Length: 585
Image (cartoon, rainbow, N blue to C red; front, side, top):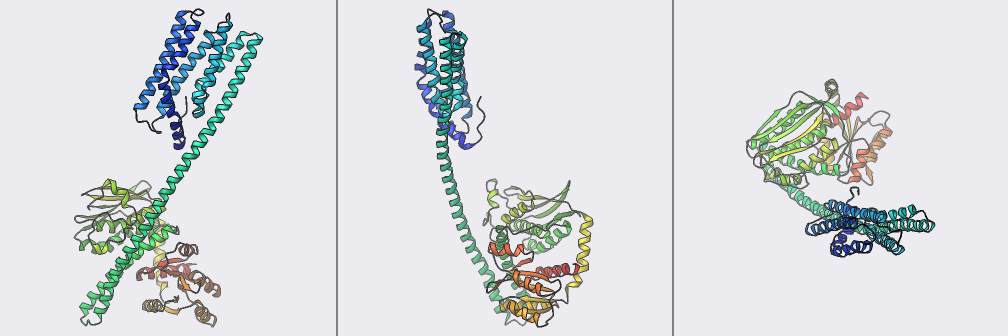
């Protein structure tokens, strides 16, 4: 029997090639009865009548079965994916009829009558050669019908033993070999042409889909730019109003209130920029996990405190059920995943609350974020992970974001090989789950002790700041001096090199913007300063770049990269960490 065809294009070719056979075989069923009927009439006086009638009735049964099959095929809605049983049925009826003609070659060969021999040989050769057209489109049809008939005739002639019959048998064998080769060649040509046609059609469809996807991506980018423009204008507008209002405020309590509002506006801007930069880094494939052992309960407890005010503002409960367990993960990326899941849960939960849980599951830790929010319909759950999508009305329109949250979660989980699962029911809530490998508690303690011992070394160091924006330079210098660092600030790399060559104190850390203008970048600047100073120097990059090439270059340098606007606590932690690494080395 024919083997299963798995290639969709090959299935389509076979389907289209055999579809006409189901039509022609039904239409020619009555005519095909005349051929065996002629055999019965010609051989009636030379063969036992019962044998002839039995053979004829068996062949009629096969012809009728093929008629029923082809009629049912035309009534059924057969597709390339469902056609295989019908093709097998067609092949089975063809093999059945072919075997009856093979039997005729041995049963009805009249050795005493040359005209009857000529009749039977001519008929069998005609049937064998004539069936090669069916094999042109599907070889099993010829192998199951025409080829056995010719082979049986050749064997019968050889068994007669006389030289003329032997010569005739060789001629029939030659005909069989020629028809097989010709059928295979024609089959290859026909199917190759059909394959090229379908591949061309599939390629055209794929190009159409890619074109549509590209257009959708362009429209999506346009939407996000419009959304980002609007959402960035809002906190900027509020920020300018608060700053202007602050000029005339003398009451200290009012100043505290206004400063709190300013901080909220800045925080809204940071969230938008963080989402944009996260997507830029993921698009550039420059996010490389840095795995470490740490207590996940401590990390999640910090996140709960971070979002406590948000939950209380919306009258929601934010609870945590997490045992003391160490995981092996990239802490920063895991925090990013959890921040997006928690903020998303709080954003779309109007009553009830959010639960953060972690449970041991063998060598894994199952981390989950539960909420009693609006839920996501089953037919829209996949769409929820698409960029720029916001499926529901959120609690605070000021905090609705750009629709990147769950898209970032999925891509980070894929990067870290955390299988992400979503269960959701409309009106009852959702639960997001993923598993993280358990870590080594002993290694986690060593890391924590190392942080405690190194934190005191971070203060009192000299930091060289390079940024071609004077306003940013002044702000960074003010901030660092407030943390009691010594600061050397330069707008250009050449200025910094000149100070160092003239005997200036060597810095402990170089904090440079990635893009310095005049074709110079922070990676090269830090490399030149390190080459000039005969001792280890920590390096830190700050950037507002979103281009894939620049981000990839920065990541490949091995330098820590922070994205503007940088949170002061994040900056201080990064500085301390880089200084501690140099101190340990």
